[in-house]
Length: 113
Image (tube, rainbow, N blue to C red; front, top):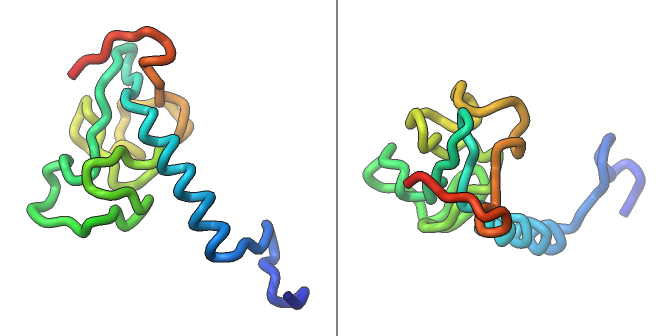
């Protein structure tokens, strides 16, 4: 690879390597089944269960999860289970894309459905 082909910032990564890395990110996102909002724990909404559209593509356009999977934290398609708005822009969560995501089975919390 020539120096001028490299991005100005960051690291050049092959398409295959990026796909393998992102599949691990999606896999880890499935462990995060709950989110802490205003002091209460809520179950996350899976892709395809948001109720925003009657028909959706098989994969999320932003984070590439399949229907029935949890979005990757920070995805612009994830719906807030508390207010029903877009999670990344609602006022229910504190700053930081990952700040409120909890893995309840690891911490022994009771989840609000």
